[in-house]
Image 1: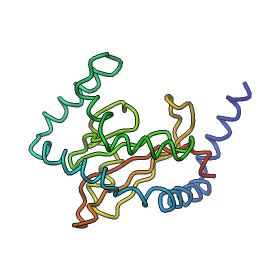
Image 2: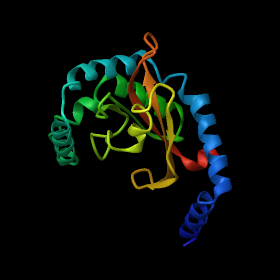
Image 3: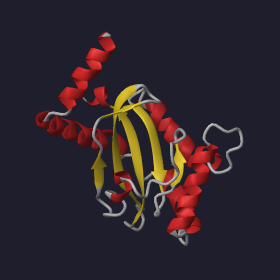
Image 4: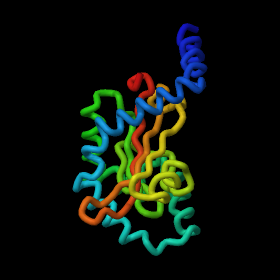
Length: 190
């Protein structure tokens, strides 16, 4: 009962305009102080470039089909679509960042130029992020774009979290090549 009351109180606080402004400032500080320094690591940039070469010609029907296949593999023993996203150098790098943050980050995943997952610290509920704000308000806008989600209860981590999403830029060319989303435990920001 105490947990339910605390959760309801926290949710009502997060809904106030003043708290939202303070929260956005905290998310920006977390992004600048913790994420930007590794957001364009060689592991991330090379993985996105490699996948962009493979997915550049896909049309929306093919992308939606891949997303459908991904969703059908969740919970199965044979996961030929999911496994490459969780078992590459970029995914290992992302898991390392999650571990370094000692419970503050719940998940990280990177997307290619069409919004398909390239690497993830853990399995995501879908493969295609291209129709969601985490992609449409970052990569689709350009190099400096950032999107902060609202506070939401995350079933998998059993905590309130926010998602910080940003465009990934190739440091050599300055071109936007993909996007990244980081799930952060909301309480850790305040």
